[in-house]
Length: 336
Image (tube, rainbow, N blue to C red):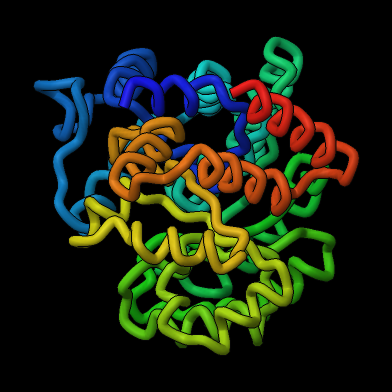
């Protein structure tokens, strides 16, 4: 295990599925709450070691109240900076990170406050670490489509700071088709598209069909249930649609890390990747997710390198940057 951990730890990596609000560690919640003269949320009043929940619903019941401490541009900067610092320590050279503006604007925080804080941290990471980082704006699927459209409209003056749009939060009774018009407008405005298709949800395959056939996303977040449908599996292979999978969070919100499915997808030629989802809550950043699935599935170094090659390949970066990062990865693999 130590050799696996060392190999993963020093390997150059890209990360494509991580929610900034999900990187809000208990210690940072406490710090920001104190700075803003707000009560510390009850979930962390007596401990800073982590959050306690056992499924998607109990996770969301903690997730949104905790982020209420975020009030100012500095707060959002500090959250993004704390994550990007951790990412740099884990040898992540490129990060694409989700943020949920509606979770903040719905409680009176201005969109400009959110985007300015987050974006300033990505600039600082580039300057201090040489790390590239892009923001993906997610719509909350348990809010109505008009709210998503309003958020998209509000984001248009900041298009230079947002590379794409996504869809997250509670999938139950909130199919991708609910937001088809919003995503069509986002595509027209030049945004790249991704959507969550969470694992083992009601109508999982139908939701994957909607995002891949009707909406035409560039990536699918989670999506491992696709192994249940050969036609859709062939479709994502043909179109080069990548999947951003998160094994530790899978193992917490369901009874299965979906490891066998991820390994099958990898060996079938799907551009599957490993990511960290909400690392402060699931207690695992990217390296820990790679270590977890690497050990559970006895992945080879070749497998681990291929997972990172996939990540760079489906990243929303220029061809030249992809070539640069893949060459860096190949050089590392050759030395090990």
